[in-house]
Image 1 (cartoon, rainbow, N blue to C red):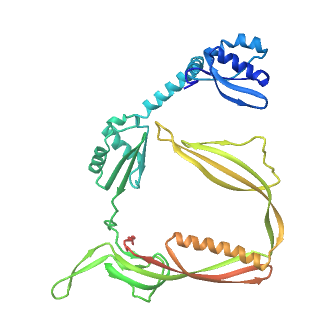
Image 2 (cartoon, helix red, strand yellow; image 1 turned 90 degrees about the vertical axis):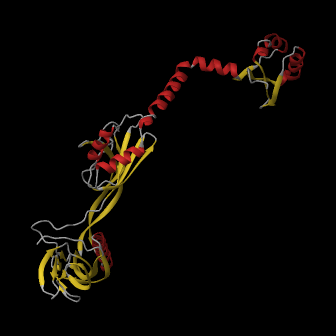
Length: 395
């Protein structure tokens, strides 16, 4: 328990160490935690005993030096000397605790047809807005009211995450219905051969094995109503639906000059940041790093962060742009280099087809030299499948 109330760590020369300890013991001064540090005698004692060392120091002709002070008393002295700092920290903690009891941001997820402004107006009618006390926030009530106000929303989840209210919704799927003056025909999205066709609703316009062109009708958007004698008495307009597979191909042709220019990167890189929000952009760049006008640059843009401003619908985006310097030099392309460039272009074409929901079945191409050019010609085979068949197009 020594030093809990007022402890002082001292150091002195160990020349008169034994005499100093004997004098302190006879005078009732308690020393503890002895140690030697590079010919220096280190010990601890009570603060009230340190005041009695003046007479002892005269006798041994050596004065102890204070290394550090510990204990409740000295800790309190430190706090009182820095009272403004600790008061500010306490007030900041109290303010943070107070502000954490309110909703400062509302996030929406899963909304496609309804904008955030529309959903926010609905919450405003319920009294839910930024600055609302979390004690008054009832997530079950928000979910119930949102389902009542919007018939197209099938599921709502309101979750309180700290000072953020997260509202997730699930909208009902739109049913494609034929409008007045328009047919509900199902048309071909591409040119190719029909390898499979299962009509769910409507009348088939083509057969399996037929070659169709883009935008050609596959299934008519009508259904014939017959009587008992199989006579057509009425035709109803419906939304054509079918499951189909169309296999097609696209020709590719690329020309690369044997003698051309090639990028050679110099290794020089520059970075610049930009902050955009509310339709305005602020560019931040180091004025000491100027661009060399004799060089060209490839620009790579990366989004660093994207956040909403509290108490506002504005959104701030921070982007980083990297400038990679290069020069163009004369270069004679070999067949291997030309094939590598063509392969990159073919991969881009395949990626574009996949994004358009086409399934690539295969690709073939060959390269020949024609005059001063490398010419690559080939074909990409693909299949277009529709597993829902709810495409409607006007005639």
